Length: 276
Image (cartoon, rainbow, N blue to C red; front, side, top):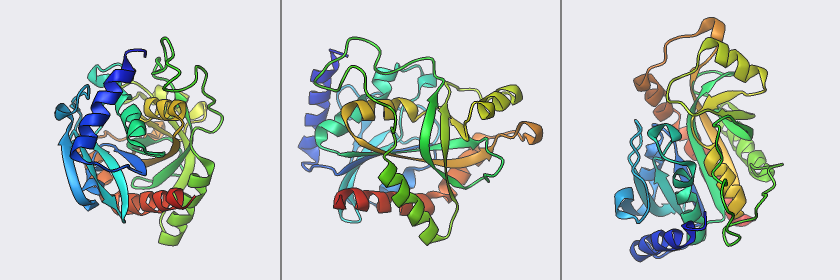
């Protein structure tokens, strides 16, 4: 971790040279959820390969670019696509952009994902506001010598997702009259989807949805002192006794169909964060 500080500085300087504003929030968009970036006003788009020390995204449905602009008048930086452990990147590289967002001045990280539903009360296309998570990725982005300039050695994870923002987001869903659950996200490495026995295990340990991202970024966001909001889009149901074959095309289509609801929740949360 000690080699990250100068790299973070270089990456932030590159972005600031092309978009000289302080973002109120950084937003990480998951698979098939890139449409929110197109809603920004006064957009400046920077491909990841033009930013020092950023890794390329090779996953389906990830454009691999930073989009800076105004969301409902609020300056934000959107990561249109992320990196995953299954792409072969170490977690320190995957979470590097979170460090850069913090250096740019963001006080809030909004992280989204497409995921599989484990809770039988959920339905495909529903949203889930993340209340807590389980890390089953067999790794942690904070492993190594700690740099106190970036955060404390032992960050507290008793409430990694900001409770006040969870409440605001669920209230926005009620006003919009659409389903938004509150539950637990479990992160696994992937890239294969899980077996029926694994789905039973994950549900048994308390998970409501399963995915292959989000947790590393949230760990680093907490370490860096950011407020955090996490929202999952349930793109397929993972019920072991009624399991259907999931395809990438269908997952991306469901994610895209949920974007208007996701947009409403994100804008409500960012507005509340700015007011606080």
